[in-house]
Structures are given as C-alpha cells and as structure tokens.
Length: 147
Image 1 (cartoon, rainbow, N blue to C red):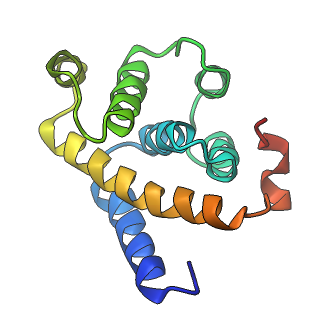
Image 2 (cartoon, helix red, strand yellow):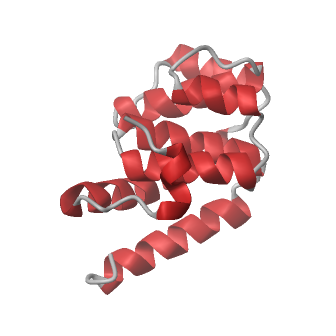
C-alpha cells in the first residue's frame, strides 16, 4: 500500500477511526477483523489478527480457536457479532433482516453495524493488497499461520 499513498492513507485513517471510535471492545474489534479476513480468504490478515487477538485484544482462547477452526463460538454475543460480520461481508452489505434483528437483540446498535461497514472497507483494502502481491507472512505471526 506504500506504493499508493492514497490507499495507505485511507487504510490507516479508517483503521484508526474504527479502533478509536467504534465503541466496540478490543476483543469485539478483533472478531470483526478476523471474520472479514476469513471471508476474504486473507491468510496474512487472519494470522496477524489471530496473534493480536491472542496477545493484545483479550479474545478468549476458546473463542479464537473456534473462529480459526470454523466451529461454534462459545460466547453468545461474540458468536452473533461474528455471524453478522461474516454475513455482511459475504452478501456485500445485504444482511438478512433476521440477522440484523439478532444483532440488535444481542445488545449491539445500528451504529455498530455502520462501523462494521467501515471495518469491511479497510480490511478489504488490506486483504486485497495482500492478495495482489502475495505478501509473505511476517515471522511474528508465524505461530498463527493458517492453511
């Protein structure tokens, strides 16, 4: 992205705003980024956000393992968040009304859904850039490599 300053600037600005203004807890933010990276099949970002989830953001180990192994998530609110983000990314922002109802019933609000749109935008910039240039996985993320 450094070769296209507008792309890098947009990514960094949006990423920073999502992190600082979304209102989602750190663990929830990481679940959002993991869901998007998985939908976009970005192995680099899935590994990176797995490490951040484990070492920085406080995602419970059982939740992280479930996400990485595509198994049911043992935390109901995070499970709803993950499934909502996954559906939003897979459907290009067209969630089923029942999904939105479940999301809101889990304690999230409409604003949270809009910040998920922002997260999808910035992760798409990152995921697609990694795809285009086959970014090598950094050594610090190697323990979280996905097949």
